Length: 161
Image (cartoon, rainbow, N blue to C red; front, top):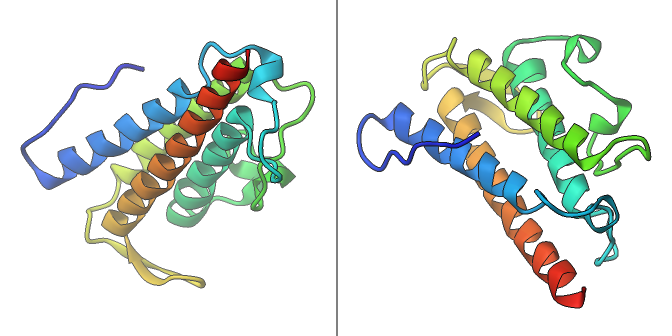
């Protein structure tokens, strides 16, 4: 997905565009890597290029499908028991599969977010009252952080041959 760069205008357009830019930046950290390199562990945790994108897809489902849309976990697109705080990727999932899963989850998140005003709020047991604005900004922060992780991992992978 190619995103247009919106640098001025309405707050919602700016926020949504920045989130889409960070989604795309995260995908670009892994796009074109071999399957082996996408799974290559360079840190002690399960953080790999593919697992970061898998985690991001889960975050989309948890925040938009589960929290905002109120769907049960098994009603969510691509739900897996791995959604609960892990970066686990099944052996039979390819990088292309995981990128497609994240893109589907992101599209669903856009649809759900569009149903709510930025000031709409819901109670979250861990965060308290949160607004749609807070959720979108939180996802920008989450995906920007993980895109940074992905950039470092990609740099290490490409420099080590």
